[in-house]
Image (cartoon, rainbow, N blue to C red; front, side, top):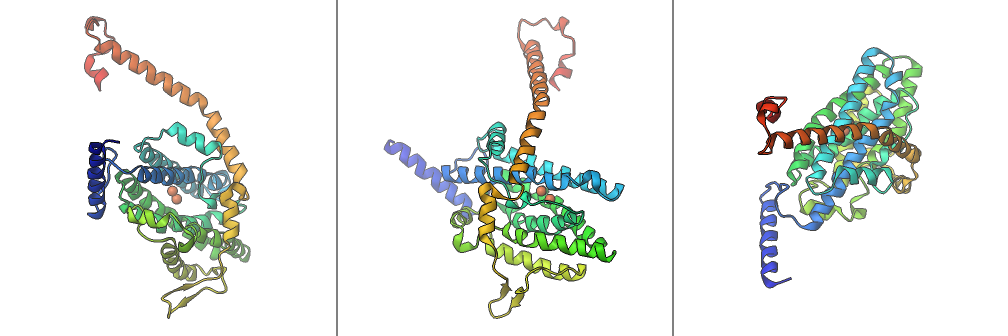
Length: 338
Ligand SMILES: [Fe+2]
Ligand SMILES: [Fe+2]
């Protein structure tokens, strides 16, 4: 590298640092350090994969939801998650990775996605617990991401968060209805909360002292709060809501520690979390198999779309070549241009 190159690099790094310090956004055409780009690609693509894989545990209940209204709501929710995946894949693409590469990473099992979606959903109450706890944890994690320093990511998160808050309320409302029902329905709701509570706490990631990438992400203002801070905020949100619902949070040690100014919780099982992350979660193989099959089944749609785009491109080139005779044009030029 020549001295001039180094000087240019330093100048760009200074500009980048100044934008971050001033809480300004980094946009796709701005220079950015390679590590910042790589971190964002990893985080945003994992986030996108989680949205797409996250459609499965609830998708399996669409046909079994207890009423037409519940089906319609659940279908809208699952569809929202597909939309979240699309916004996020698009945001990741602005960093120079293609959608095909991201899809390949997911279906070959190289990419990670949120550990929570490998758990099974045996009862209808799981739809309530997922909405209340999983979407609730997602909101706590994601609201600060609306201010992430990378523009396309932050903007995608604004819309996602609005939809997540609808998801959380619909989950809460499913649980509330069950809790006002029969003994069997109350037991079903409590059982679902018992199964989803601890995994939802793990969604914030390992404790701060065991989260090596967090400090750099915070310095880059991608992440605004630490894992433990967000987990604490989430528990603070759940406790009064659990009271309204009449469900018990399955942690006998849970209490507000006034002296420490934080929630004291029982031990979180990080070994179980590591197992799930390593691809050994209860339904990990099943989720990936389903995703892979859906991708293969959709091959004809992608081929048809590509053929259609190629045909349109050819038509456009034909109408814009100088030797083309406008009299033989099947469509008026303005129609083609629009
Ligand atoms: Fe989502
Ligand atoms: Fe959601």
